[in-house]
Amino acid sequence: LFGVGGGIIKGPLMLELGVEPQVASATASTMILFTSASAAVSFEVFGLLKADYGNFCFLLGFVCTLLGQLAIQRWMQETKRPSVTVLSIGIVLAVSTLLLVLQMMGDIARTKDFQQLVLPTSLCNIDD
Image (cartoon, rainbow, N blue to C red; front, side, top):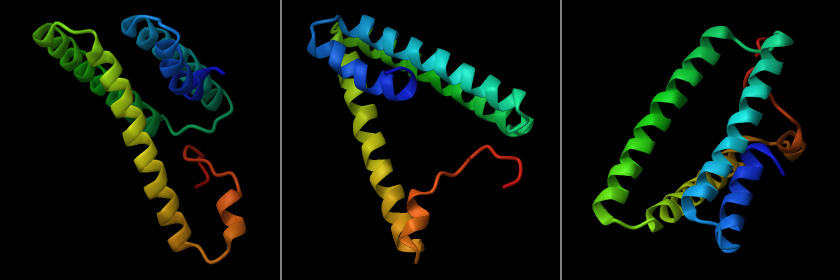
């Protein structure tokens, strides 16, 4: 397990195994960083990425990560507890699960052919 899926699974797993919250979070984030970067490079090399879309998503991700990091650091300093990191991982998992369920419910409501739900799609394809 590596990448976004690995980060989401290994983060809580490392916490359960007794790894310090900051170490678990940093390790999961590093796995996600390298996998996301290699995927973006692959899409660009094969001409499957719209440059303006990719640049916008990169900038948005960078700014949101910076703001989130600053907020969590401030929260940890105010509470003087490392459990804030565990709580933030839990919140991200809960929100991700909720959004996944909502997306799937919307897809089911919009489609007449349920075979279409299992076909792979591309968010970054230039032909779309």
